[in-house]
Length: 427
Ligand SMILES: [Zn+2]
Image 1 (tube, rainbow, N blue to C red):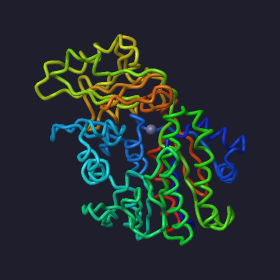
Image 2 (cartoon, rainbow, N blue to C red):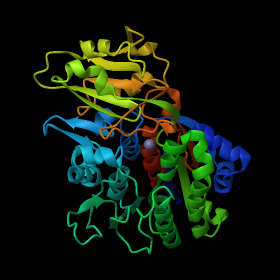
Image 3 (cartoon, rainbow, N blue to C red):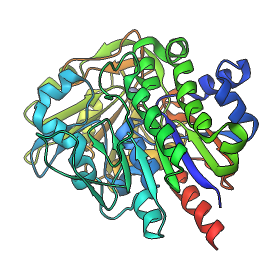
């Protein structure tokens, strides 16, 4: 039976993947692509990493897994949750609380118990799963942090590696957070991945590389290719090398390689709260990257439709979405329209699931091309790249499968493909 490696390259667009393979600029990706089948798939909405990785790991849309955005209003705790839009945003939301939300609460509290992660499902079958750096990691094994002054455990897969903070095994990997821009996070992942493959220490491995997205935010989706593509390729090549070369690697492992969302260039930044100041006593605005949510406070004297109308002439806003009389309604260009009139990829399913997320705002906002919403700390990526909206560039991802007999049209198909892979072999 072949084991399975899931490789998630954060923020890599289909165009980047296709260029990389055609030009031969990424030798490992090129070799892998020659042995597999390639397609494009859709992400979820908002197309932001915590939402997307939760969908990849659980196979569920946001209505079922309950992670709504990078930043959201926790209604019962009456506070903002911020998973790391920027350092300044973490500080604005309260540093200690934000770190706890990102590291622990996202998996232990916010991720719905009604869905199971790929690690939970496969380990219930007696398989050993491993996760490197992926932010949706919930599993059944208790892991204590590596730092002596942090004592709270996390519950992850049997083999669990998370930014040097949780390490189920000693691998000799350098600290993950030494120099983010220089790629130290993926360098950490790569040493861990090499260690795991050398020992063949898993049945299923989720191997998450985040540096490409980071570079793409700074340099734009195309500019990132010069900065980070070779590094990504090298970190995937490290797994192949650890197996003893491509033939040995593919003899032992099936592969699913994809990204979680795309990216599009952004030139302008908007502070969405400024367009809604007259509702300030009635709403909470949670904005980051290219998506925002507006939450109505319990005693609000305004409804989502009025807020949607107030955004009619706000050019950074391409469309808003809300529920009205039990139906999902989109509004753009100053008029309401049913979801089936939207031409965005998989729009009905993605918008409906985003609106049905109990942690989502009453009004969801998707940014226009070229625009980004500043986060809580006022930070943005104008001049670089961003994502989060419903538009195609943010929403389509490359998917390469090798030795996996499954069709992946959406990132929510990955978990089912992984489970079927092992189920089919065992049956
Ligand atoms: Zn990003």
